[in-house]
Image (cartoon, rainbow, N blue to C red; front, side):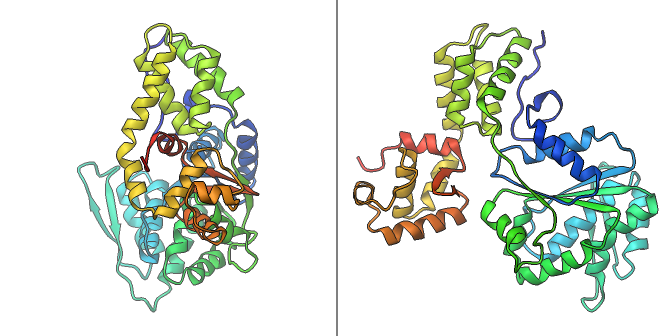
Length: 378
């Protein structure tokens, strides 16, 4: 029996905290081992990062080195190059002397400036100065290949929130530059993932876009309840507590199997319960989790128009299609079927909903639960 935290959320689930996705892991392992670029697509909190880190950690190949880059905060090409070069240099070298050497050796037209924090081995920043007429951007994009050749290894470059580049100025031109360099690299495999399905599909599945057919596209699905239930029950058992299969299934139902929320709610239930979990423990845990996210959900609502909010209320109350029906339009004050189409597009762009065929779903299952409890028109 252990008393350690049996669940993890808010960061990648690794080791014993990771569950299922056996087929996804098998496919991704085969791709990365054999140098096939891979595009992972799913909404936030579904476990993309956890899957990638699990696969990388279990590949057991000393000649394959991973580089992880999160470009969510990048708002321009310059910021992308900065994040890209910093991550590649830092994660392929073990000493800061080597970082400096790599920067000077492979970035000939760049004047790299390194600044170090209190822990020089793990805390450093890298800034650049270069003449825009030089081919410095190409040099930066070639960094992984050149370092891989020098070290006689293969790099797996993992780029999180890749769809962010769609917001860059002249994004298509930028994407052409990346594709033109990356497609010729023989010692680097790219694993890119993103949470905005419509943007990722536009980047990788549109014949007119530079990254069309760049690699194997994987659309992650939610981990099913039948996989979550034994995982949750076993975690409680390992810590000397008992939760019934029905109660574990309730956790999945409320969170709609969204990985991060399943683990978060299971954690709250775990610390609230004594030896045996009660239904009240679960009800209280749900209340707590909704309260924790209340401020965030309120901010989301404040940024919505009345029509957008009405649409989401209808969706939360069980309307998944048929929004253009007269009774639905009247009940939820959607005004007209023409409005419904524009509302769907705007909410999709805001990343609040997903549209699969004719069915519309929330990307955030707790936001849905919170909306269902609100009385906006009393």
